[in-house]
Each structure stands twice: as structure tokens, then as C-alpha cells.
Amino acid sequence: MMSEAAVEKALDLKMNTVPYKMIGKDVSVYYGEKRALFDVNLNIRENTVTALIGPSGCGKSTFLRTLNRMNDTIENCRVTGKITLDEDDIYDPSIDVVELRARVGMVFQKPNPFPKSIYENVVYGPRIHGLARTKAEFDEVVETSLQKAGLFNEVKDRLHEPGTGLSGGQQQRLCIARAVAVSPEVILMDEPCSALDPIATAKVEELIHELRANFTIVIVTHSMQQAARVSQRTAMFHLGNLVEENDTDKMFTNPDDQRTQDYIMGRFG
Image (tube, rainbow, N blue to C red; front, side, top):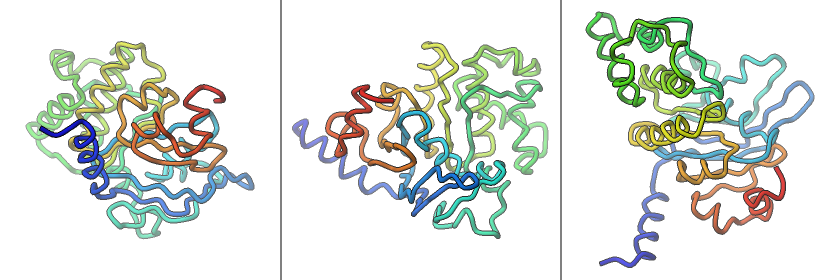
């Protein structure tokens, strides 16, 4: 029988052979004259949850938004460097941004279901992208997506009622169902539990564990405990710089940089 140390070493070796899904090289972001990110190099491993941590205003959400070009929607925002998704440069002028955001979905801090029925929330993306055409196909997408979001059994008898009528935690899981309905490869989550109570947070965290089997996930969180619970890799940002990135267990027990240690210990933030 393998010793605990041997098991840990085997898991580390396995993690280090996981291919990269997205690669960020020398990524900088400017809002007008103000520079918000400084030459960030961060690689996102496939079917892995990567947590971005750091104090408010450190650049973690700014970096997250570069991964599906959400920064394009901000006036005077400019991104330099290179970000690839399966070796495709996502900032290449030939890239269709709508298609990119289908491949790299996003779940926001505050649940934002459309003012439509639960059913219509889920089929919105597949309808726009032509992923389903018949009622039977749409029905299957709705059931499958809600099942993946751990919500189907709670709402199956009221699919045609407004999504805004659900509880906060259910609304967030509906938004996750809406994101997975277009079969993305990567899901970005920007503090998805900050507006939720502890019970709803636990359900979303459990869901993140399950989704990792089929999706690559990047999550911004201000909660050290959440990062430790849900992620396999953690990246620490401070003042627009990537301080370090490593296996989550190592980051929380033996970080390489004193700033990471100080942040995790609550000495600043």
C-alpha cells in the first residue's frame, strides 16, 4: 500500500501533466492612462479549478475578464500581451467574439437571470447559436443543463415560471445552467457566492466540484476558505501583479512569497 507521501507525490505528478487550456503571456491591461495589470503570465490547466485571490483592486477580476474579452465592453480599455485558447489567439482580429464567449462562459457576482421563464433562460444561448432547433432538442438542453447545475429536481414542475422568482442561490445555479447550455469549454466565475447565504454557497461549491469533470473553471474569490475548498490551483494577485501561482495545498501551507503568506494570514487585504 502506498504511503500518504507517495500518494501526494503521484497526485502532484498527475497535476503537472495536465495540459493547458488557456495560456496568458505578458498580459497587461490599461484603463486609459492607468495600468491595471502588469505583464501577467498565467496558464490555466484543463479540467481544473483555478482560484484567483488577492485584496480588492489587485487585478484578479480584470485578468478574469481578459479571458473572454469582457474588457472589450469597457471604454478606453486596452489589453496587450497574448492569450490563447487551445492555441488560438483570442485577441486575433479574425476571432468572432460571440463565438469566443460561447466557448468561454461567465457567471457573475450577482445572480442575473433574464426576466424570462426558467426554460427561456436556459434555451436563450442555444437558440442564438443554433445549437438546437426542435422543441424536443430544446427540452433536452433544458433538462441536461439544469441537471448539471443541480437544479432540475427543484424546478422541473415550474419551468415556465419566471427565473427571477427563484431564491438567490437557485438564481445563481440557473445562471450556471444558462452558461453550460451552450457547451462551453471554460467557465469563468467572478465571486459567484458573494451574494449568497452559507447554505446556497455550499451548494454552488459542490456544483463546482462536479462541473470540473467536464469544464475548465477559473474562479475569482475573496474567501480564502472557498479557494482552499474548491480549487486545485491558486494564483495570488497584488497591485496588478501576479505574485505567484501553484497547487492550492502548497499555496495555503507553504507559499513561496511572503505577500501570499501575509494575505492568507489576514495581515492585509
